[in-house]
Length: 302
Image 1 (tube, rainbow, N blue to C red):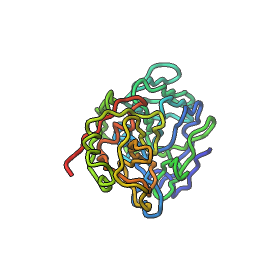
Image 2: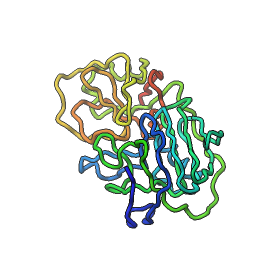
Image 3: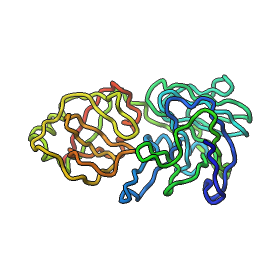
Image 4: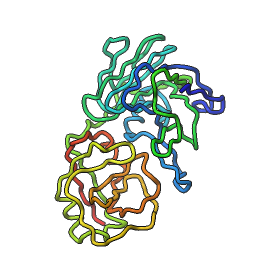
């Protein structure tokens, strides 16, 4: 993939130029920004960074606009060679950062000389790291976003070795923080839950049991949904609903009774009942919860 852009498609309307070539793509590295807003009625998922505060923090460290496109890695990191001098920042899951084998800062601006290899190592905690570049990753936008959507296939494909990525021009010089505080990845994940709209499809004590029982994050969790392991919820109604709209954070319950928390690449419709919705503010922690992490739901007043 050579991520070329036209002048009208570059970052903030300015064309990018080659800035990075992929040396090691890692298990799953994608381009993400703040996602596609306002197109769910077209059947298009929102996509975008699963840990949105981490993306915003990386861009803030570099003086980028909050929604500038960056790279989202998954567990195993990524390595890239700079084709020109660049300024980068890595946030999200804590991980080692090296430039030509020498340790560099995590959570702070890092200069990368032309020809040097930037290596973002495997996450030591959490799941997803965010690598931002001053100027942003300048892949062509699709429906207003540069994000890769793994469900619909919109946007750029996940990175492969040899891909060249264009980078936009550096933003105007402005005051930037030396450090942006972020919470540590969760040792125990606690998600608030607003009941409805289909809580009445479950046994009368289902919400009380959901608040009392402990679940675990399933290895099947991905950008589409955080899947769980634990005691199944008991249904009070048989059959399924006609497909209806799904929102970010919806907790859908398939026939096996195990709650599924929808994340960035979730489908826009679904037929399994939704027992409740997790507030968006809680989803960044869900994005960083590793398989096996204990999970509790706190049921909010209806």
